[in-house]
Length: 323
Image 1 (spheres, helix red, strand yellow):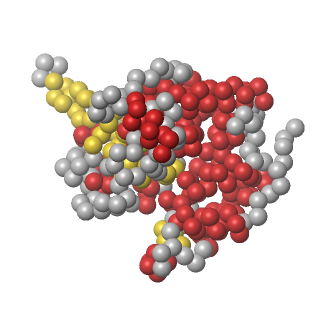
Image 2 (tube, one colour):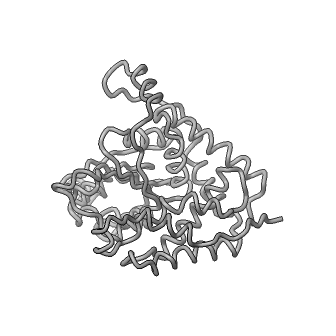
Image 3 (cartoon, helix red, strand yellow):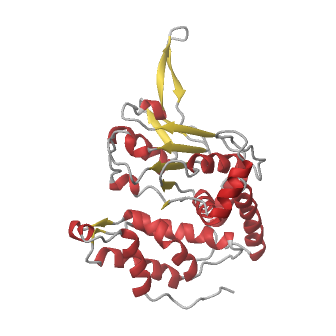
């Protein structure tokens, strides 16, 4: 059953209220907030690659507050262990059995701060959680909260003492983007409201967490025409054939672009996907999945420019509005 125009209008209204609510904390960053909301409603995860002090923690906390969700922050460091994320089993002498103590990953929105500072072994503790919304400890699988979203951050400038995220982990992030510094007007508004250092603005919730789960299920019913699927397939094939690319976009990446495009359309109040939805999300969904050839990197080519060129070279289909 496909989404109806009435359902699309309701979806757009709720998503718009969430974006507006978060904007009270992250001034002047409507596009980034909308990407984060799109990732959340797509049941995906977000990688923020940005310098310190741009509001990454505030974004994660504001999202959780807006949907009546829980949020936990995990500071990734070289000495962090997998059990510090997932939780551990502790022996209860009175009951004479092991009792599982949940880790900080058991929250609706988990902020993995400076994720590339932990060892690959610790980073891998998130793989099952991000893919299956569950963690397995001592052979027992524990389901995570619903909705569940990881917002991870890494500093693209300072690389000393960091571990590059493996391709398998990058592929599990639906989107990668950056917040960036606010413009002059937004900076002035922030400074005028700053009565004390690092004050968190309490936000009223917009919807319960259950509504987010309902919206994610509803988004899966947005109509995707065969020509849209063909367009995404041609874009993905283009990443694999590009001379600058050593490893192109995976099938998971192609599916993620379709999934995010469905939500993007619904946030716009439409019950069908257009080529513009795909174009709007191609950079944040595809670019971080590309592994460039060493010679191309030496020549200054980056993944974003490869995706931008593909969007120019790959002709989109004509809009086809379903009846």
